[in-house]
Amino acid sequence: MDASSVIAVAVIVVATASLLALAPLIHRDTRRRWEKGIGGGGLGSALDAVWRPSAEDAHAQWEAQVEMPAPAPSPGEKGLDSGRVVIDLH
Image 1: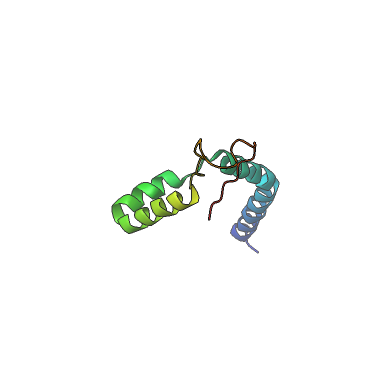
Image 2 (image 1 turned 60 degrees about the horizontal axis):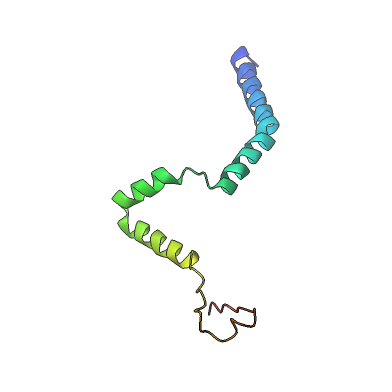
C-alpha cells in the first residue's frame, strides 16, 4: 500500500471512532431537542408554504386534528354537582 491509501484508511478509522465515541452525546442532544420541541422544521415548513402549499394545508389540518381541545362541561350539566366529570371524546 502506498502512503495515500494508508492515510485514507487512517482517516476513515479516525472518523468512525469519533462518531462512535460521540454517539451518546449526539443521541442525548437529539433527545433533549425532541423533548423541548426544538427542531429544524422551521425552514422546511417555510419552503413548504412556497413550493407545496397543499402540503402545508395538510400539515395544518393534521395539527388541528391532533391538538383537539377537550370539551368543557357547562355549569348545568348532569353529574357536575356530584364531583365527577366525564369527558367523552367520541
